[in-house]
Length: 62
Image (cartoon, rainbow, N blue to C red; front, side, top):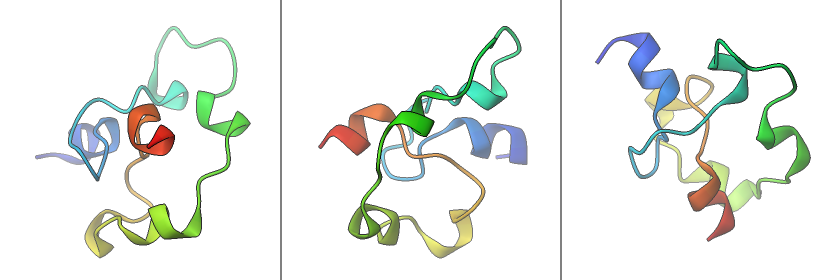
């Protein structure tokens, strides 16, 4: 998987993460700027994907 594909997939479930910063047609901030992601959830991201991919809405909502 290349870096572009990695950054578009949730590192927890592998589904598209809908990152607003990666959407060409995006006109505003990413959805994630309006939510708080717990430290526990962030700690579940594999070390090799930390800082490289956003967690998706579904995983944040769990």
